[in-house]
Length: 372
Image (tube, rainbow, N blue to C red; front, side):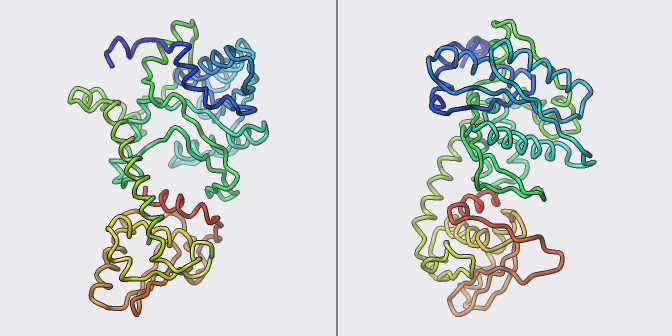
């Protein structure tokens, strides 16, 4: 797009295209912090809903993390704006102590936990967030910097499951709400132009420019990268292609189920894998089969992609040489003997966390999350 197009307000027809696939929901929860992106999301959703005879009720929800003195005032401003649109509003507060480290990560976890609870309470199947094209580009860069694999470089999808959390903070996907990002293909400049055209003001959160945090530092790099042709759209295209490739590989992993003993994915017991069949699979496919098995029976949380790759390489060498192997990873014991790989839950240790429960349909998604 040209610079002029990137500065154009979002039209009513565009807004309809952004939200129309959500028209059958009884209620939609809209996460609104008061910043430009989420304020534009609220305004565009309100415009879309007002143009329909029938459709979902809208509920704006502001999560006040209590990290800045201005946050309570900003939440009240969102409430007033929602009232102007005839939309209900709730403010949810993060109470209690705040961590000294990884503050943004914990704030994100709490925000999604509160939003999911609000959606369940309102009977809403979806929570809408205001992630933009710029956010997508930053996520790709962030994942690249962390050495993410194919799944991670796919960054954010328009729709995904919003995890719920146990009392200990562990993510669970059973009973989760759908997280929808309607603005993911729109640059922030168009959202600001939309608010300007509608005469709507918004809050400015200085933490979005705080160099102590990774995202603001990456954000500051974007103009330089754009000068070299690596702008937000190109990074978003990369993410879309990675998601497409990732889906193709996941389908290949599904089709490679015959390397695993029949019925293994529906059980919590040991998973038996034919070593020679696993070795003959394409490397990425066999890596993911192994990762799924570990995700199915392990109980020590996500496994880093690098560690899974190291185990996969060691296992491949042992299969070729016909040697015995026994390794532990993410609470799972992987044993190779006599042409058979066994993946089973590791013996208990006093400092191991409580065993988590994944349904059969979740083990594939869990394996993918662990590779990011």
